[in-house]
Length: 247
Image 1 (tube, rainbow, N blue to C red):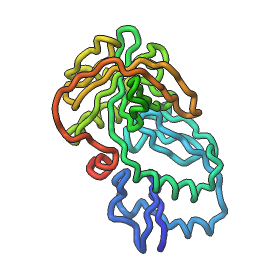
Image 2 (image 1 turned 60 degrees about the vertical axis):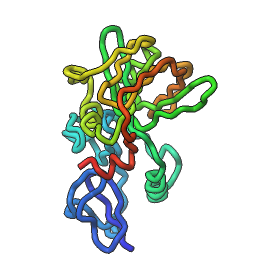
Image 3 (image 1 turned 120 degrees about the horizontal axis):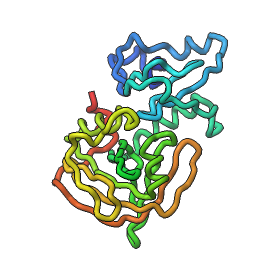
């Protein structure tokens, strides 16, 4: 079987022909190149740049003029460390495709700094113990929300339903450095932390950070769950469902 690489988002497709549509970024077959043909060319080591807003990866000597996913400019990109896990690129890509089979939820992680509020979308929030109630979340360095959590030591989590695609786009595809994400949004203010919880989500919990772990590109925050509130009964959105239905 041939392998085809999307030149926009680097997704790898296996088949005799490229796909009609990239399942990650939505471009057509004309944006795919045959990996075997690329291998015949002299290898060129190119830099990789990660968008700190939506985590899109760009390959090139410089960051792009505009992110094709969330439309932010080059100042929102950071240089990705070369081969951080010591895996050959092809092997790493193959493993990444396997990891897409893990079931994640989608969440809006909120925090505050003085009287300012911000939030971002994450698929890394998980409960880690039940006695006492503790949870963890990983947030990318350079994001405004991670900066707020580092300073305030608290965060809120709004758990999204399958009907919340609009919230994913609103909180995940733009940066709080440019817009007030909570303007015109309906939310409650947590009594324990002051962090906002979205009324259009399934439910909301408040968390207080007990430990911060530096993971290189991300911070892992391990926190005590302080309080919560339910808003509606709907089926939670998984990351797999979002990827399959976001366009």
